[in-house]
Length: 395
Image 1 (spheres, one colour):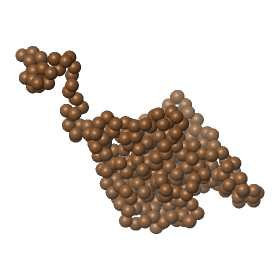
Image 2 (spheres, rainbow, N blue to C red; image 1 turned 90 degrees about the vertical axis):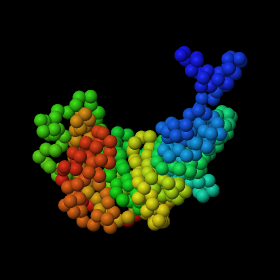
Image 3 (tube, rainbow, N blue to C red; image 1 turned 45 degrees about the vertical axis):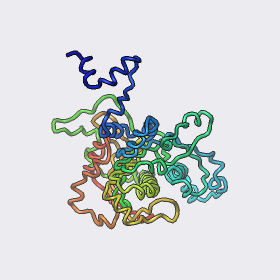
Image 4 (tube, rainbow, N blue to C red; image 1 turned 30 degrees about the horizontal axis):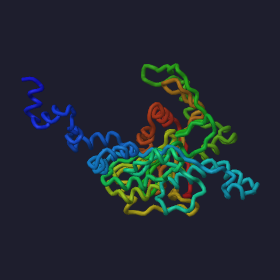
């Protein structure tokens, strides 16, 4: 039996009609099962692309609302000129403390404020000095492209867009860049886990990084040679580290990273409250500078136990902390990259960790697994060195 005969037997009426007018009137998308369409939509994930899918048909529009795996990508942040901000133009103080504050926090103040405008729902934030455009548009708006071409940009926050999704379980929000304004050549990454407050944070930094195409030699036991900084000093920090500003710089990195993480956490409250089905939430940036993570238990903890907000700014209060710091003047990775002034900081709230036990010190898998290759290897290498304990008050 030919394929034509099979088609005629299965769809006799449709086949005859199409044969008469020479057209195929069957909508093959309508023949796809909902489970398969949902699988495709979940693979797409990006809310902007899903918004376009909503325009295809009423069926697609209804199914998109059931997607569980979502990605919200923010295209760009537009900020006003520095001189237009009263906090900068009116401040004529020349005191050393005021200067230090501007140096440390000035570069991250405006991006954090813009982040607040992005994640706050419409009407819940004060009149902004910093404008913001996100390409994440509300579902089903068919005139978006024409409106953009005419210069009329519609502002929609992720909080508003995500209200269209009823069964969201996995959410990833990606900012266009990291909040921390660091000097050129400085390498800095952080990852923080939150519940109602900070659970832990890991920071990996270096004063500079030298990339190389030549892999570093590896010994038979799998260890990298002594060029990696694991030599005779065994991680001891020289006196010059304290006197030449090395320690002060690491403290600035730590405080800046914690402020960025706590600001992200604070601004996620509306999304978490409105989506009880959420199992996992990740807020990262296109630069890969910082990652905030929350699992289901941590999300539920925040819903049950309200967070403590900082009185100084719109961010979660950082609790008193215990920290362990590892340092290497040079750290050569297996791929040949060289981290100069490599620093690893592991942070936990004092009330959780108290004094680090021997078991906690020996099991630092949560520290080494905080970063992707090749920087997970850098964290493992640094964690083998001598650790230095620090404490920090709540702020």
